[in-house]
Image (tube, rainbow, N blue to C red; front, side, top):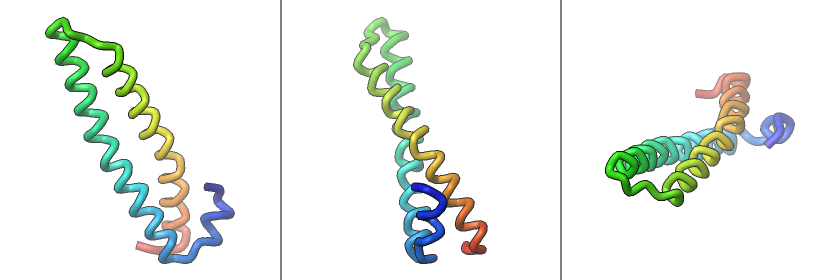
Length: 83
């Protein structure tokens, strides 16, 4: 979402978008940590599978893809003085 699109959103819609992105990031972080834990655990036990590694990498990619949008939304929230 571009900065121009964010400027056109109402305050309520912007707050809702910010909350949704924070929720998604909050879901992704424990998911990534759990996948990393089980991937390392399987590796230590000698049962390492490439599918677990691939899923972990893709999940990290999903998290990284959300962060720029979250930063833009938070910047717009600060610019408007919303809490």
